[in-house]
Length: 145
Image (tube, rainbow, N blue to C red):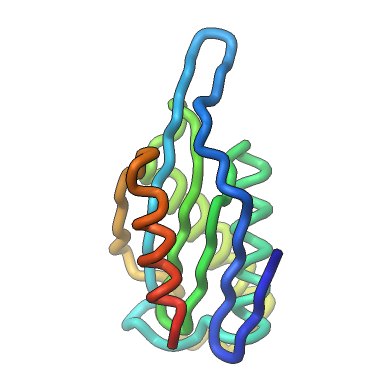
């Protein structure tokens, strides 16, 4: 289910917090990642926010990550994502930020005015079964502009 509100994009998915069983591993690796545009400019609105949401989902699908929740505010992004043990959390943000910066700046000329789309700063937090509801409530509170 996707909801587009006036100044934000919030996409919800069914949260699967079961352990993932693979050939030689069992894992449950979920991250809460936050990043913002350079100088925290409020550029993530309307078509840009929609396109960013599509890019995040595309990258996640290609890398076999599962987007559990994505909330795009005009000046920051919250990503709640399930990964595998072979992926560093820094690779998740680096890959999404790199691909989205390239594509968004190509598709939206107004973003080319910024020296770079994203700051180098990123927030990472690990999530376990106990704190899923807490993280989702936090993201929902942040989504109320």
